[in-house]
Image (cartoon, rainbow, N blue to C red):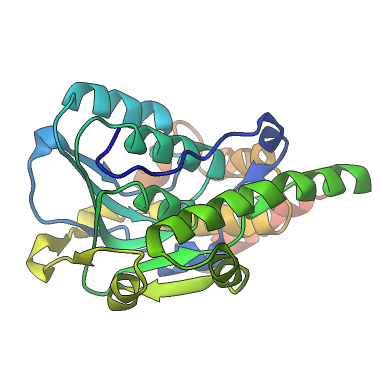
Length: 279
């Protein structure tokens, strides 16, 4: 176990019925070029993308984090975190993997730790906030498909999951679960100093530890924003993948290498695809 006795968040198999996706507001604040300036590569893990599988193949999964932790072994580990969130199911699994690590876990929030990325941040024995960084906490946000009975069932499944997150935030901060739940209801953005003052973090990270790598951004943020907006509009994950495949034929890396097209042409192409998929 990590040095702190942190609560486990239990998975509910019924959560698989809901599609957990990125929130557009979280992606909008995310700056993927913000990364750690240096560090011990052997004992550090970088989470610089959305949580869970994504179309580009760059998403951070529990499988990847588990493999990294096995390679590190029973040594102190540093997790550099800048993520807009994503799949709550994957994020919950990553949190549990980190809380079970057999040495000290230091989480460094370099840019944003939004949505389920804020849950991952809570797995640290030490949580350091970078200059200008934010945590964002909210209730579980999902896209579900079905009739009213399916929707009622999905809502019922999310209730205990929200309660588990509130309990985790309360455990870290010392506030009551009701106070944590209220912050989640308000979809609260928490700045670096406020995170320390409220107990969400243990300290601040010097600005010298953070850099901006222009090459790191590419098309990742625009693609993530488009996908998040489509998810919010109710398009299924398969429909979103079909849209990207039509726009960027070939492998997902084609999106990064594609020759830029005039904005109105892209918008018209995307709208045409959405119209054909709308039932």
